[in-house]
Length: 271
Image 1: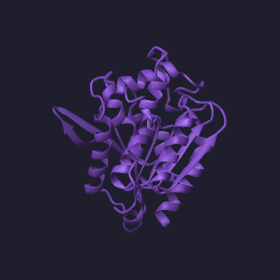
Image 2: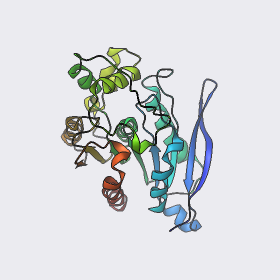
Image 3: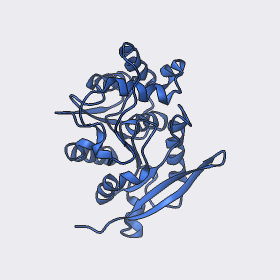
Image 4: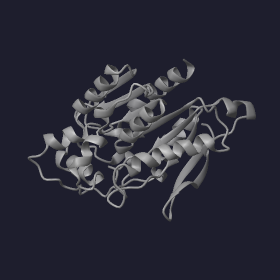
């Protein structure tokens, strides 16, 4: 077993008002030459845009470091205190900070990786930067999901998301009332923002290649992942979609998705 990566915690990558924006850096230095040639990943936590923390990404970050990457795991502003597009802007600011930092890696090789709300944010970042993204159970057509659930109340979860590991959150299948709640909470209840917040509806041909994963019967409807792949493909963006049996959500299916995800990243960085 390889040594655990070094972790530099709470590195400031920006400030909004008086609030510092912080990230963790997971690193395992090999040699000056090898470090300069490695790729970097911006690893974005989930939590419905309203909960979650970079500290929960230790397990996945370690797997990525074991695969040869340096990993930047940012926190970002969350709803309801900060609504769309704050989280989107913060993730992209973290990537800009990493590229301008003194950390050693190949600046032509940076990708985004995230699950759930993080899966949404990494595809947004990919379209903005042209960099690759790996998205597990991202939510994309937010307007479409809300319109399809207009006969339901918007109901917060009874799960203690702060206490749960990332891999244990939302593992029991569909919960459309809570999904609706997370989306409306992210836009502060302002439905006029849903169009702009719906990734599927503003795909860009300038984006990077995207790997999507989704379980067939999970919290995020598989139709949303399929529509995202179709929208990207329609503008010429290369995509891979892995559909996984069962109800697992995001890091809940880590063991099934990590191999294909790493193979995708290896392929785009060696092309």
